[in-house]
Image (tube, helix red, strand yellow):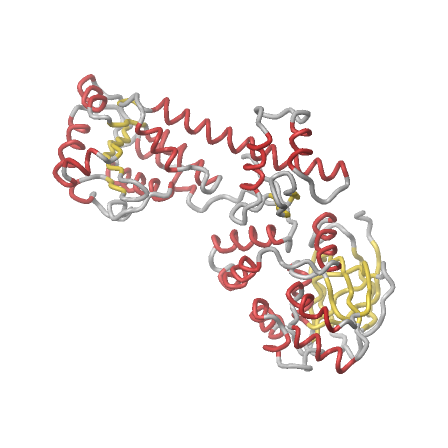
Length: 481
C-alpha cells in the first residue's frame, strides 16, 4: 500500500536507537507505555533516556561507534526526522532470565536491559515497521515526554520500507523465538568497515552486501559499476594501437584484476621484470609478452623473445612449468604461429583479455583461475581464442544458472507463502521453471549452499542434519547484465 496517510504524533526515542531502526539493524524499541498495534508515529531522536548508564555500557560494542555518532548529531535547537514507524506488536519486557538472549539480537547490552527493568519496573518492547520519509523534516519542538504532537500534520506513505515484508517477518520470528544470531562475525566486520563507507566505494559495496545478507536491508541490489571499468574498456583499443607501453600496463592490471599476483605485475612499471612484459607467481606461474599494433602482422620475434627471455630469467625447469601467454592484436605470420604452437604458447587478442576482465568486474570472483589454468594447459596451442571464449561461455552459463535458481527460490516462497524450503521441493519446481539446463538434486544442493555463503549472500540457509533437511530462503537477486 503506497497511499498517502497523515500523522500528527511522534515517538521520542534515543537517537542511536532510531539510527539502528533506520539502518535495519534492529526492528524493536523500548517504551514506557503500552502502544496499540497499528498506531503510527514519526521518529523523533533525543539524547535523553540513555543516561541510565554511560553510553559505553548501554550499547553493544559492535554498535557503539554508530551510537556515539548519532548522539553527536542531535542538535539542541532543531531535530531532523528521517522516518516514521507503525507498531506491529507491543509486549511487556519482564523476564530477566531472557535478557542475555535478547541482547545480542538488539543494540543494548544485557547490563542496560537489566538496569532499565530495575529502575522502571514496567517496560514494553515495540516491534516497529520502519519507513523512510522522502525528505528530511526539521522540527524545533522540545521533547519532554515519550510522545509529542507535531505542529503540522505529516504526510506519509509506505513507498520506502527499510525492510520488505519477508525480511521483516523473518526478523520478527527470530526475536520472538530468541533464535541466536547466525553470523556474529559478519556483524563485527560490518561494524569495523562502517567508518570507511564514506570515502571508500569498495567498502560501501561490501557494507551494503553484508547488510543484505544479515537481513538488515532488503534493498534490491544493483550491479553497481566497477570503478575499474573505464580502464578495462581501454584494453582492446590500446592493444589495437601503437602504444605498446600503455598496453603492457593495462595487461598487467588486467591480470591483477583476475586475481594473479607477483612482482612482475607492477602496473606502473615501464618495463617488465627481467625484460618480461609480465610474470605472475601466484596462484601459479604465468609468463607472457604483449604486442600492440595497428595493422602490422606479429612476427616470429614475439614468441621467440618470450622463449629466450623466459628461459634466461626463470631457468628451464621454472619456465617449462609456467603458463605461456601472448596478448597480441595483429595476426601472427606463419613462423610466429609455428613457434607459439610448438612451444605451447597461448595467443589471445586484446578483445578476449578484455572480455575475461570485464566478466570478473561485473561478477566478482566469477573467473576461477584454476579452471582457467586447466584451459590454458590444454591443446590447441598457438591461437587460443576459441578455447578461452569457450571458457567464458561456460562461466556465463554458470552465472545464468545461479541467477535462475536464486529467482526460483524467491518465486517459490512467494507463491507458497512460506519462509524457507528444502532441496526436494525446489528441485521439483525447477523443471517447471524453464530451466537453462538439467541438474540433479545433489548439484542443486551444492549451488544452493554456494549461493547462501556469506561471501555471496544471495540466499540464506537454515542448516539441517543433512542435505535433505537443509532449508533455504531468499535474500537478494542475482542480476544478469
